[in-house]
Length: 473
Image (cartoon, rainbow, N blue to C red; front, side):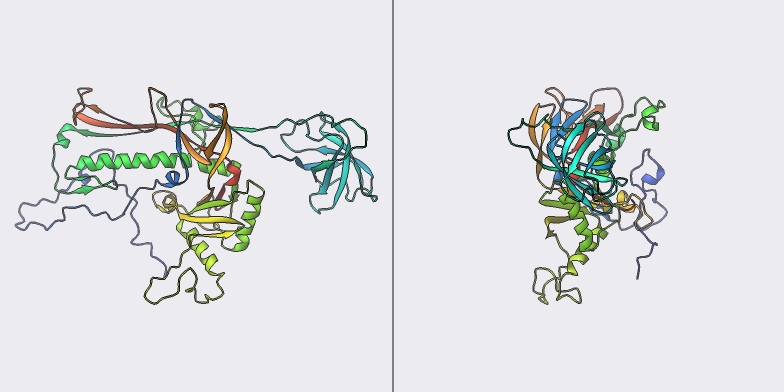
């Protein structure tokens, strides 16, 4: 029987921006001669409410002293063009091939190199040798090795890649050389702030409810709970901002806004944004069969081929992986014999998997952020949903990049956070107290204000090795 919508989970926030009557207990009826039986301790009905943990598991933090973080990533070693055309008809012995790939200026093909020419739609192919190159027009002349000439008409799109070279005896060397070309990426840190304020009078008010928070703080002073929850909420935002941040596009409302001179206007490149644009995207929700994963593995083969990967998933995706792996057990018709256990009647039945190997090692980990209904866990799913993220594949380990600030190659985790810091200012996680209460003596304000600040961005290195699982093309 499906779970009914009513009663459901509560989304009403417990935090209020201003004191209201609903924040306080008002049921004090002194005409009632019977005192209520009360529980002093607050009941934690939602368990651990924080969602931060992802970056602590897969990333690292390191300082930076610049407004811009830049790094270089290696390009492909070999040359291939996938949008070419031939001026020759079928059976021609020679042809002039034009390279139409975008962002190509000065083709990396030289005289004497041998090329593989293939029609994109049919796979019909020829092998030939380059006899002339025009880098200005991005064309080259090729003579085919096959006696029957060109095997395809010249009107269809072609792919060309280099597989070697051939020269006659006693000839000069290769004409021209190739220069390595890196791709330069950058990101900009954003400033994240929060604040909690309480008046001096309220700090002296003793409550009757014992409060507690996820970090273990307890007491009968209500402002302690509010201050600790502000801190926990800020720490969650330090992570979720790195996941969800997007840069402000030119002429967008953020980039052009003038209504408030205090708010930011540039944004940053978060993990989801980067993987959506430079990584791999599975647009069908959750892969549920081995053939689905085979297509993902095929894409990873064409990228960095990282041996070990961790898939951070929501609950539905986790169950789909369990069901997919359970279906591979030839002895599990009822679905109760898979896993590394002996089906002892006195032991708990483990119906979950933590990982599997198929070409690569895949480890599975639940991601609370994707399950929490106050975050992405409340987004729609299914074929009609668009953009709902169900999981993220993150390569394990680190990669070598050229750090332009350091001026040398450095090993970096694929995901890491850079925060602003110098010898005199560390903006990784700043907190300070102002006012005239709670030990502060900075102003005549009869209150304590706890301020929080961080300036940071996330660097997603080798985004081509990540896979984002979501609904929608």
